[in-house]
Image (cartoon, rainbow, N blue to C red; front, side, top):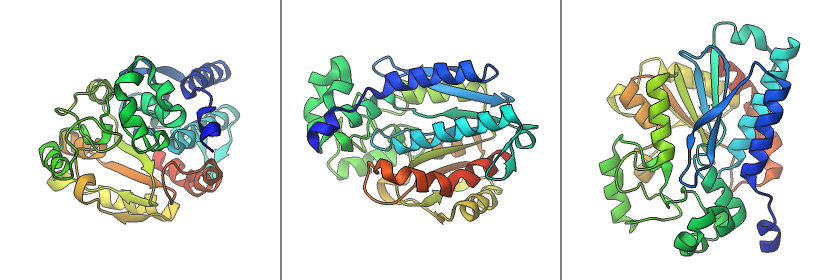
Amino acid sequence: MEERFYQQPPYYQNTLRQAVRLQEQYPWLRVFSYGRSVLGRDILAYGVGQRQDAVCYIGGVHGSEWLTVLLLYRFLGELAAALEEGGSVAQVDARQAMEHSGLLVVPALNPDGIEISLRGPAGALWKAGEIAPLIYAPRPQYWQSNANGVDLNHNFPAGWEEIHQLEVEAGITGPSHTRYGGPYPFSEPETRAVRRRFAACLPRYVVAFHSQGEVIYYQYGEHTPPQSELMAQVLAASSGYALSQPEGLAGGAGLKDWFIERHRRPGFTVEIGRGQNPLPVSDFEPIYQQLQEMLMLGLLL
């Protein structure tokens, strides 16, 4: 089991090849770097339709949750094919859905963390020696953080101080494989990339995909937009997922929390699948089939 784990091919090289294939096949698809990770890997992004006021889907925030990356690449490929051919996805006409809409897909916000989760210290490149003890502590495949040992979904300035205090009370006081929010908000290049891009081109709303639990979170504080609940109900009805509210260490400092508080627009976290991260590849197909309609309906909200 462990030997097969370390024989995983480099994820990042595969995504670069995938980006080239997609752009060659669909020249109208915008492919660009959203920013760079701690280790200098490009955070790839894909744009379809109008740039302003687009819907934004983000995956791969946590290293061990790489099934969310597969989910977004699969959907992006099906949507692009349907737009090219005049077809539909989940019985929704793609061209009509995109006629007055736009979509930004960031399949993996944390490419370093995914490489570490899949390949162990080899994925950490020149930082391997520095963080190897942290990687081996829980076993590499459970790695959630970036290459600095910072959990990106604890690094946004929405209740960061409160979450930081809970981290300290839980004994998390420095770099870790999970739940360490960094020395201060936006300390990491990956979260700063989100801030910079959103300042330049603000999405209509944001969905961050995580795993696991089959739940949808849509609330954060007093600035949760009034339309968020109805939008969440539509997403829940189409996916079969339940609406919920995170608590404790999951109750703030996340991407959707910051987006709601800073921009006063709807933000959602969708926890895909059930089980223990990393979810097995065998779970991917049923998860995708369950969420395909939700991903498509999200373009219409």
